[in-house]
Amino acid sequence: MEQRSIEQLYERLGYDFRDAALLQLALTHTSFSNENPRLAPQHNERLEFLGDAVLDFVVSDLLMARYPALPEGDLSKMRAGLVSEAGLAVIARELELGTFLRMGRGEEQSGGRDKDSILSNALEAVLAAVYLDSAPDMGIVPIQQVVRELFEHRLEEAGQPRQLEDFKTELQELVQSRFKDTVRYVIIREAGPDHDKHFEAAVLFQDRELGRGSGRSKKQAEQDAARLALEGMKSERGEVRQ
Image (cartoon, rainbow, N blue to C red; front, side, top):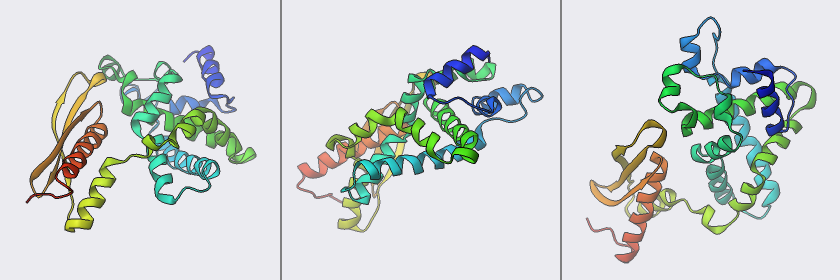
């Protein structure tokens, strides 16, 4: 990666790395390491692991400060939406993070630079790198500032009623309370190239299909299926016919 590119990412993150090697590691996908073991013996998966935990902590802290009256359940739903794979991929695209990744040829040819999973994992790794680079001398303040800047308007949007909807949780709680049972989800169709997948999911209760939904990720398809199942149950006056 060219120095100019690194500086561009510094500017977009609002953070200057003291140890540029940490950022380079965060931007190294496993496919690059596999194809270039001598040049890159390590990849970013360990940083992804740490970044996931760091992000959960910082976002939780920001949500509690912004919404002091909200109960734990609502805060959990808001956090889940903010740090979801799809949500993180949107932020990664705004940063143009895909253009900075070191990636193997095969993965790149399959559209890896725009895959939600790769982008969201890379963003988590980058945030872990910020934390590791700054924490010894400055504690958590720098990572809090970076996350706050990246998530600022999303934190505001998360408080809107529509953003608090979690149809899968609502459906499960309804079925559990009435029937002491659970629902399950199956992916019944997957179409499109790797960089533009489309999924269709069904939600089942005791092998009966309650709803079928679609989306650009498995999670979105399952949420859509749960939403339609809830609508169906309400139209049947809350009864699930067995």
